[in-house]
Length: 475
Image (cartoon, rainbow, N blue to C red; front, top):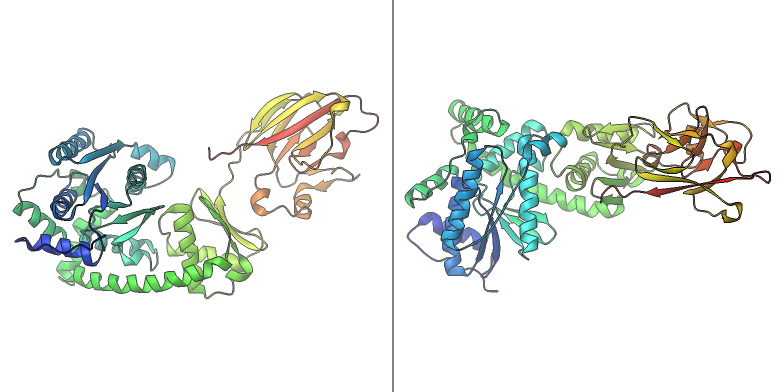
């Protein structure tokens, strides 16, 4: 495709914008772009600029609006306003809404973070469903400065201090671009006024109950007044240096990952401990930050959290570090494992000797069968019991410290904890082990071993078959 050639106009701001598209964002002609438009001045200016660029550069623009439902009738009015603009400009329009407060409460997030997650989920979905590879948002230079300070206060490390990137991945085959990241808020407002643009003012921007607003309205003006009126320019130069440093470190992280990652997927990762401990502590911290941000939380975590994780390297096997209320990192024998907390049921499930019962992440089926139907195999999820030795009333629960039983093939009792160690059950698997119990005895460590006292013998007349079927909780 042809490279954009800046079209000289009488508007200096527009010329700078088009030049930025060409030289920094490297946009080609005929690109297809989804514009995130909230209705505020920043997004309305971005829409106006992109619309003007599109007329000369053959961009295909589509508008996406996400209603956070945080401001009642004002949110509805914003949605209608953006929809009307899309009709006026004859641009394809996408919209959605979400229950941000409910999502924030359910996931223990701030309103701001919850809104951000839901909004980006929506934008990525719009892009992918329309085979578009670029999403553009109207973040500006002032937003990036605020992000620098917020991350500084959180102690998020080098990555967080590089501010808002001009380009980053939003998902598979979708890029998130910020074409106005170079422009100050004042420049944007001046352009809007000069071109007589109309926008909706979000009154929540003037409230002091959001951390970012406190920073914008109170702290930064105070620092500029009392310490350095050129604060934003100074921080801007600092962020540019940090971006370069972060890129360099990021390359080092990527080179190290192949020898470290044992497994990595959404909400889980495990790292090779013996290889990890050979790395410099600074690189170790950056790797942990990278893994958490990309597989667990989608945002940087405070430095003190990273420091707690690194202390696991010299801790005993089985030591645990909390990332938040939902995720932990465990030091296993040969790995560092990050996972969700076990969804241990609070209550014991009372069951009968026969039937189908759902507990935790599995379904247990107990059924009497004929002796000739019994087929022993290596499948640990299927076991057979002497029906007459199993009480009518049973319980399912998680195993607990202090539990003991008589494993199949043995006469004496052993602690369940020691049995699991001998079976080389990992720490992650161990926290999810359930047991089938009578009033006084453990009859089966589910999926591992039955109690010797309820086994099938030559004297057994009736057979109880037990089968476990795992449930995929991600579906």
